[in-house]
Length: 69
View 1: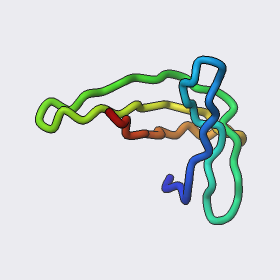
View 2 (view 1 turned 45 degrees about the vertical axis):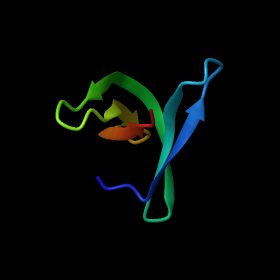
View 3 (view 1 turned 90 degrees about the vertical axis):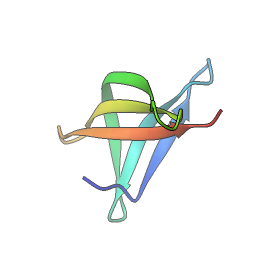
C-alpha cells in the first residue's frame, strides 16, 4: 500500500510513532504497532526506523521513517 502521507504522534518521551496514514484523500488510523526496529544501512550509515502496523480495517502495513543525525 502506498501512502500519500503519514501522521506522526510524539509521546511524552518525544519518540514519534505513526498515528494514521492518508491514502487517496482518506485517513486510516493506526490501531496497533506490532513491532518496530531501528536499522542502520552499512554502506551509507543512514538510519531509519521501521514499523509494522495494523490499520483500522485490519490491514498490516510497513511504515518507514528516515532518522536525522
